[in-house]
Length: 320
Ligand SMILES: NC(=O)c1ccc[n+]([C@@H]2O[C@H](COP(=O)([O-])OP(=O)(O)OC[C@H]3O[C@@H](n4cnc5c(N)ncnc54)[C@H](O)[C@@H]3O)[C@@H](O)[C@H]2O)c1
Image (cartoon, rainbow, N blue to C red; front, side, top):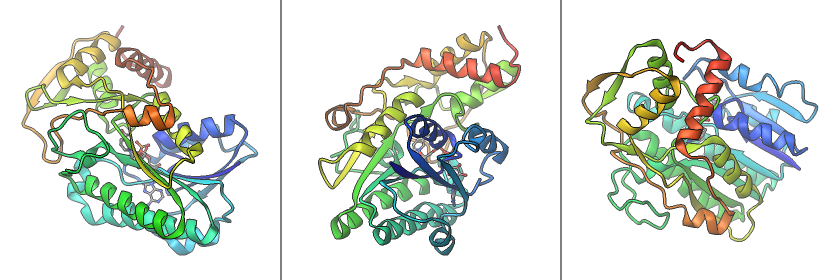
């Protein structure tokens, strides 16, 4: 089959490309190597793909509809749209850019899907859409989405745009709400990656709040299994589905697990709560289990161990 993967040079996208090429599919990636974090990391992520005969890379910006139309040929069995300005805190500083890339880019892709007659569109949404909703674990039919960052509001907008296109043009739209994803190649701005490096280097780690905030961390292999199942899903025209782990851990608990894996005590720098950060995330994954057969299989301690192993292979990390 032929797939278009946007953001395929990024953390989650490059893992999905591994999987799809491994299964013998043809994959076209669109990515602009946005400098949100070091583009050299993205070049490294795709190094294995570049020589694959079934891989094509298009370096283009999703905001540039004309370039997409010119560079891409259509005829895809599905579009898996993972490219975005990610990151909650930076979205507060650059809300217009987040809106243009995330919502404008999704709009451009949905238009192309319509023009090309592509009937399957899988979209990377986020647990951040639930925001400060207190009814954890969060379910997809929760009426009260309460986003508290520009990033989160762009993801809500994209989910709604997807509904428009599924209704008007019969494009099946599956919006997957990822709950903090981690594992090898994780973005360097995200907590597990950042903390592991800082603990290994003996640097104080920024600890926002009193340590009781909690997150549902999901290992990359589990997320990819969920995305893969969504690509094959055919039973309805529009679905929003949580992909989480349903095993939330507090910030203090997370730091203990990372310290144990790195083999070094964490030095903590206490700081106030960050605006835009939600106090807790927790997924109800019953719908993902029913519709996609999704069953996350990686306990946090195991996943963190695998992540630290990967970090050590890339560069010497001090510690045990
Ligand atoms: N990592 C997580 O914990 C997490 C959680 C919830 C949702 N998500 C979503 O999953 C998706 C993938 O996240 P990730 O962690 O792999 O992020 P990432 O930043 O590693 O990957 C995103 C990719 O999109 C590309 N991109 C950004 N702007 C672009 C543009 N204008 N045109 C073309 N390409 C562009 C980037 O260069 C990057 O390679 C994103 O949509 C993100 O919002 C991620």
